[in-house]
Image (cartoon, rainbow, N blue to C red; front, top):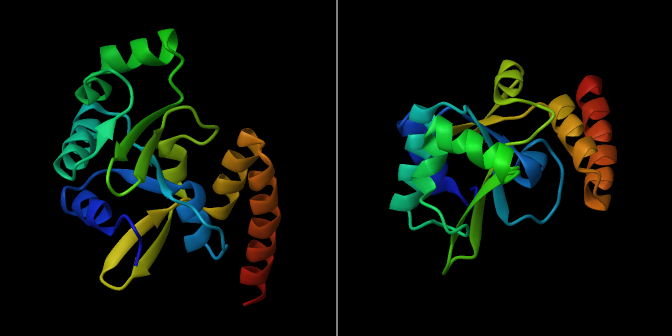
Amino acid sequence: MVIYEEILREFNRKRVKYVLVGGIAFNLLGGLRSTSDLDLLVEMSDKNLEKVVKILKKRGYYVKQPVDPMGIADKKVREDWISNKHMKAFNFYKKDDLKEVDLIIESPVSFKKAKKTVIKINLGDITLPVVSIDNLIRMKKASDREIDRIDIKDLKKIKELKKLK
């Protein structure tokens, strides 16, 4: 099962609007790569972000930034952080477990766009909303890291194999 199962189950119970992206999404789509963080696109409404922050805090997650994490759930504060502090992601971490959760702020694929083509993946009794292969490729192209270029090649192969089925 997914390393962040307890958080994802709580997100589903509380009806958090989210889409899995990044390395875990890559693995769920058929890739194979070691990854330790949970990357998420979330609906950027105050109400949705408040749910996310409460769940993460309840599960023992902290923020690295010297700020109140609930600030992300306040549109005015959030917009200030984005424009004046150039926030591209908002990171939560769990000290003892070496777990990290990144809320992706700046992305070539918005939550709204990702939600339209989300792939629902069932793992046992949990259903996870995973970004589509095409949207994950767009996101990885924008990152332009070596690991992302390798992932893009693999994602294109996975897409071709899925067409053959």
